[in-house]
Image: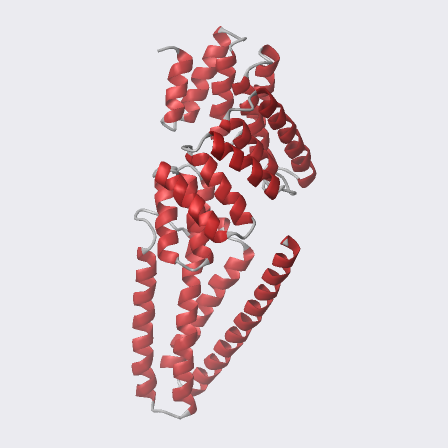
Amino acid sequence: MNEIERADHLLDLGRAPEAEQLARTALANDPTSADAFVVLARALRRQDRHREAVTVARSGLVQDPESRQLLLELVDSLTDLASDSNRVRARLRRVLAEEARECAWRLVTVEPNWWVSHYSMARALLAGDRPRVRDALARARIGVQLGPNEADTHNLVGLCLDNLNQHDAARASYQEALRLDPQHAMAMNNLATLDIGFFRLRNAAQGFGNAVALEPGEATLRENLRVLTTRLAMRLLAVSVVGALLLAILLGTEAPWWARALLGSGIVAGTGWFALRSRSYLPRGMTLSIGALNAAISWRERVWLMATVVALACLCAMAFAPRDIAIDAGMGMALIARMLLVAAIVAGLLRALTGLKRR
């Protein structure tokens, strides 16, 4: 087995840094080797070093302009770079997305009967700030026709349908991808995101956990799994609000302190049980440090977490504090409930406006 074959094998094992070193050694021995350029670009892309992958793919095409594998690596690297909103500015993403589409069209022209050509074209059409989702869907469906047994094409069709709010059809495509390849991490991830949208949190957690186990180095999967914890926090918040309403009734009827304490003990115990049950949804061994969670979620999700913590504190005060303090804590819970109601109304209006815009 030569260096290029060993590097390719290491990529299959998920050992991209070692594959990179072997590919660089192969290039040093033969600077015109198109195969070495392909493996090196792929190894860099696996490490999210997309800019370097683009440079390597372009250099390889100078040596071998007819290499479809190098052209494919260039398209995929440009697409990945155009989709990286965290490290690439919007204007540059538009330029990169356009270049990716031009290169993808060239690949389709050269290899019109290769399902990978149409798959890469569909990915390029989805890249950037102005994705052409319907065009991508049409191209992905051509990929399905040419490669009906390829899980990647079905997953991409599902992604396009998901973006078009055709959730049932998207779910069917994701499930077909998993039927063809039960270890397809991205299909698991995408199906789990659908489940989160419908608050099927147990299914979502299982899907994200399985995806992370298959692709432990994939940052997106781990971020999605952490975001799931905020959905679980929303459930705790709902339980806290219901408990606060029951305690408010006791306060309003001037029930004795022991009645509040007894009910509060039951609510706290139930909330703790609910928290442990929600935690059991997450895969074993998953670390959820405050720093990692804070880095993975947005400001909206941070607000939900803060509201949950404050609500639990108010709930304990309503149950066990003297009557005057308990009433003040109840007012705090009322404020939180009002804030949540306003947030729900605004979110509904935004969803409606977004749907109108999409239509």
